[in-house]
Image (cartoon, rainbow, N blue to C red):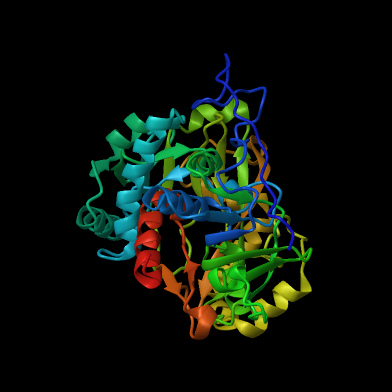
Length: 458
């Protein structure tokens, strides 16, 4: 058995001009404290598969609640939080959009408060810059008013409906008939938050193993000698290099690969993950004055995604977007990234074809906007008429892990499951942790730990 790899880093002191929370500019803010209490062992009481913000928050919450447990995090990349966590808009959502009494609504409202509190405690920079949800057409006003009522039901703080003159006071270059002012919305660097979770986890004695891409999960075959490891740590997790980790219990937070990891363990592969790429545009620096806070459209319930919006970033840049187009690779951040396996899984095993037929005109429009900047700019001009094609640049992209059922319906809420048999009874799969998972990560982690305790009798 190969000893577990240790994620090496160093603790960086706060330097002049350094990052908040003790990270200096000379050593990047994602470097972690060195080692953990059991970093040299290959056996753990609990293993978390997935080093994104949900996995790291869950590992942190679990070790803080159960400090006597040996806990390991497995991440397939050489760095942590580089996929969905590292490619999102950075918005701290208020919880206005989600169906009242849903987990998404409850966890977002709780999670945003916890994120603000955590960042304040850790000295992680954030900006509570607010958000306007703006109606630019008369027919959008009833939907805007209904959204306002939903936000009140969800307990979102500080909401108010404002008219044209107040829109101009908050966003001088934005036109609109009416808007919801969401002052509690903010922005943060979620990768910095996730890596702070990882540091908390390691300092509490946890171990982080990177470059560990899970290829197989199986029960140990009991040896004639009835080895202690085989009895105490009956689950073997093997990576693509043939290295092994043993454990008693497994929690998977695998994001874009949650369905495949579930299949590896013999559990239900449904719902399937369909990757949607979101391309962002960037406002040129000399035009940043046009946008002060987040500016969002009124969502249309007929369509599956929120729509293009204006998002300030912690570095001062302004992102415009994202669109939502099918990605031809699960980690396909570029338009021509392609994986035959990923696209065949999407077409054959998911309900994508039904989703396409249900939203054909929307999908065609999103593809058109992805190809032609002028089409996206035309949409943006509904909110800020001064923006022109020459004011924007193509920017980064993210890929959203969208869970889809066989009937082509988007799975909107959280999905947890395990399985049957020896392995299934020792695994909790976090199958769907949809946006706003980053905002909700601390609240989600508490719920996951509750579920782990109940299932595994910790």
